[in-house]
Image (cartoon, rainbow, N blue to C red; front, side, top):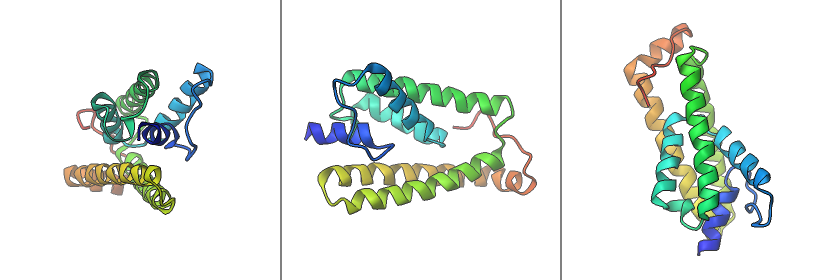
Length: 163
């Protein structure tokens, strides 16, 4: 039920069971920052933000306060990725490499969640597989738009207009 969904949303990044309601705000904030920082994909950040707004999936049972903290952390992550691109410190080749690594990690995460063989594990596995699909589409889109050439020379910058 709602408690399971709250555990899913709160514990996804680390596999933990979630932050206790009595935990200090700083601890919740730092765990949300860590969750957001673990996301390499711009499109996954946007997916997570949309899920929070819809209060769907793993965010269904999360408190408004926790959703707000997660939203702030994800918005900061999105701004960080955008700034890396605009400053030229994140190349397309580096971004695609990070995406590939993140896809593999998320696939392993989905399998581990499914192996728990409970409702929370199933919800977390489904969420992880959605993120895998989004990253694969993002990767393919980047390659289709010339990212393959950027990977070959290693010097092309990610386009700020993409997302």
